[in-house]
Image (cartoon, rainbow, N blue to C red; front, side):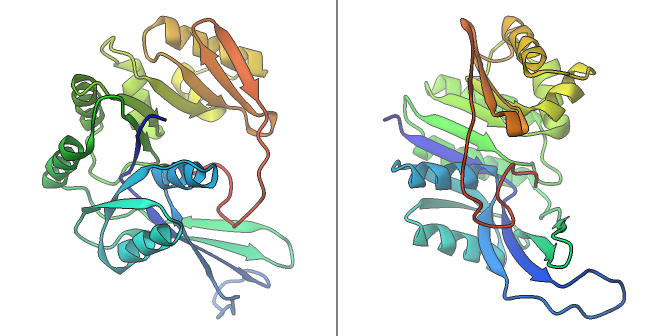
Length: 261
């Protein structure tokens, strides 16, 4: 098995709880909160561990919330590599109304990313990456992070003969796709909404979405794509044709499902 390093630049300590109903201007008594380590790369490392594999989770961590995330992952047997940042790693809060079963999610921004942290990131990678590594950069990007850093990351990993798998959203994803330099990513993951943002089109059916994915492959954006179709499953788009898979998994916490933070 190829060695795997996951990168989470804006992790979160996910807190989930329940209350009767949300009303303004009142103290709302909640159940004992559940704490989970959250963030795209962290989720990948946790999934790998549950499937019996191993990875190293490199995360930007700060303060007591960062320490809590690291401790929870160590308890799960996941190797942790901390990238120290100033300030507190953010929290994300999910509150379920017992009376209505509605869920409310409150997403905090996280600490500002500093230029010196970028250099610390590359120092870590230089020490840890070997030829053949799979590097998964997944999750949202912190405030102040320069998306051009992803280009640098891809170039340096290519020089080290390692492959980059990208799973992010928003302006960074748009930039990576629309302004790509012709050097393809090993893999890019996106969902239907992100594909629609990139294309400016609505996709009525999964085959329409897959067809758009094939145009990205032909343009040299990536060597392969993974496109999430919600309840309809996941489509993997390859040069020789798409494959699809319907994924089933148990609900473990209020944060199960697509990482949106």
